[in-house]
Length: 152
Image 1: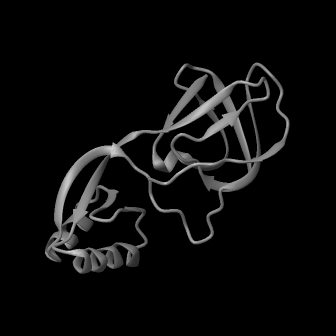
Image 2: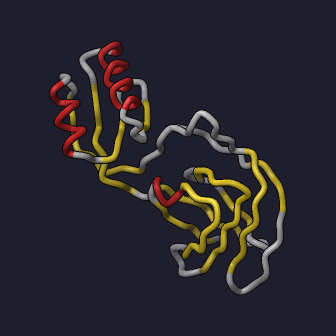
């Protein structure tokens, strides 16, 4: 089984030639752009499985004084159309000095962290899809299936 480790930005794609962690070449061809999620498994035409892993990334952890303050900070982040991972007690965003200064000025508690980034999907996100992909050593074909996965 091959694995491919990608950042959140790299996991948002439609059609792309990718290189797995073991060097295998995979051609991904989805009908529309979408976010591949950590742990998602793709089946190649030769029957092998390629597992997607979220890369560890430099992120900014945002915490509020309480739940209401964290909600207000989330609104400010969303108002700037920033990609964010929303959790019960914190928000993770990509590091940005200007945004960090703004959030700090609003009373946010900030910490630089290194961890996989699982941003929220858009309002029109869909995890049910058809796609084709192949290793370079074989031909590709199309197949349809639904991936099951969790959002932790």
